[in-house]
Length: 183
Image 1 (cartoon, helix red, strand yellow):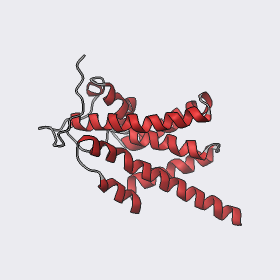
Image 2 (tube, rainbow, N blue to C red; image 1 turned 30 degrees about the horizontal axis):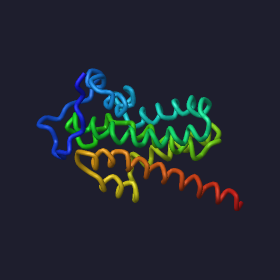
Image 3 (spheres, rainbow, N blue to C red; image 1 turned 120 degrees about the vertical axis):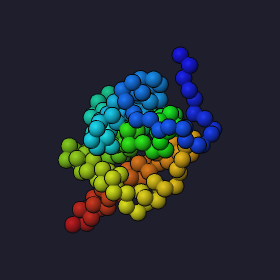
């Protein structure tokens, strides 16, 4: 099979496409970037992708050692950068809503850093992350506008703003925990 590779051309293809199951199966990068189908949700694909990230983390945390979890998160960020770059270019949209790997890997990063935590702690992290990802206050809006377009820069932009949303989530949780400790 002759798979297209990411181009150094940073212009959009002539006609934007809509993500579909058929599109997802045309290239392994598409399957990854579309969260193995979770990004194809007709409503709230980012939330569905985040839920997929949470559910998959429940398996990961019990199946891998801490060093392996760290390696997985790091590799998933790099793999996601590639997959998001290829998929956005092939869809002809610089940051399509169907690309949810960025949400998935951000959830993994949050849960890795918070581990161990209860279901309630994970739920709070999920809600905070969805807030930061959807509303994009302050640093998340800055990150969202920093790397736009197609090519490797645009692919990194898709991932980067969700990593910033993850760190904002972790910051709020750390602040809450420190205030709780003081009381």
